[in-house]
Length: 98
Image (tube, rainbow, N blue to C red):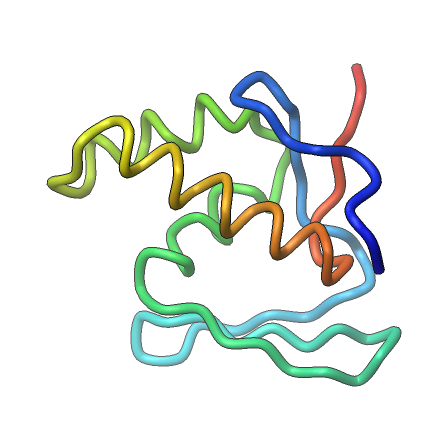
């Protein structure tokens, strides 16, 4: 799947409905029901995954991470956008409007 809609800090994102996820000792395991592929997220990724079960802006997710973890703003934004773009490319999240 190719990146059709690049993400920005103001993008509103949400996990797609065609996946199942589970907490596994503070990390997340995601099964993409359409492809049968499993994905794993570390503790930070699992926090992000929990946040985007309902539509959130990238800025909202970043603010939550900055409160929870000791990380500088630029690193947080770069790493967050990289992860979200990867999840979008895999079809696990989508950009929503309205």
